[in-house]
Image (cartoon, rainbow, N blue to C red; front, top):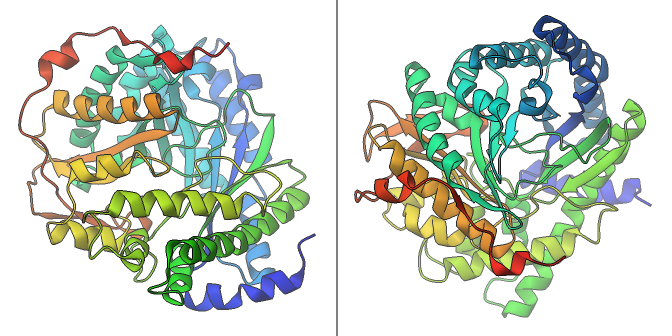
Length: 454
């Protein structure tokens, strides 16, 4: 049982240490909206989303006020639109019309983002998948709240290198289509390997086909809480350090469990999962990088950083998994550059490079996240970065992702401002040597031998 005493215990965390519930995300299946007529499909999508989520924002605000727990975002995820629109869409423009419908529905119910303009192409692309992918630049430049994702690899199937090549081109096209906003469209586009069906965090959230008709998923966040807790064991051995992280993660996750149960009860929607991820913000003291510094590295990126992050990720999961009836999503530590002041400082100081970030993704919960790169970066280079990250996920049986932003018209060392939770970032250099011949091969990288478990 969760009781008010546990809530009171978190007051200090909320008031002084930036503890919040980062998001309540309602997952909605659109499979029953499928129709061969595009107008009918769009109408059904709009009506179902606005009906299911009409009370989502108000309920989140009431829970926040009653318990004194900040709930930063209320969001929606939907069935991957490539599956929903396949019967009706005959062109990429048709798919973009669905994106506009999603945007209109999101504005109507008041959520800040809606995810699921997505395609699942780990083993190959259907014509509908490819049309959706090619519509992404138009969809993201013509909407405000729509987020898009493409899963192009998995441990069981390998990596679809045709999709990898295409996504490098699409990311660059999206950057150009939103160049008047410093290529902001790319901040709403993520490429996955091993994408989970129940992730509540944007931009990668979608409502998986294994899910029910409607579900509530919650993402908690508490980097500032963990950092503050570790200050009390400064200089202690690793066993003491790990115990403190586990205890803190347990308390943070109990807050998420409480919010999830309340939202589920009040909205009459089944509870799905609590995602344990430590998701930083640009706010001072709300940084994963600062936790790593508290563990003992001078700056994120210094020798020992990957080991410290591995320790943090594991202990967060060990502590959090005991605090909730259902843990899922991504669950671990996010390391987005633009959204984490400590990461930004590390890049400015020369401590952190894309190559070091790639190494860190082997042990964190996601991947290369919110990294601004020069606008003249070739599409093949972006594809190569995606392939590297997908390979890490495929071989290590974990979720990895790439959300890079080639900022058109800007180069290494310049700053780009995204605003809000997306923060700001220095543009980081990428390796100048070409991988075009590698990307151009096409086909599929086979699954690793340990995928064969049937």
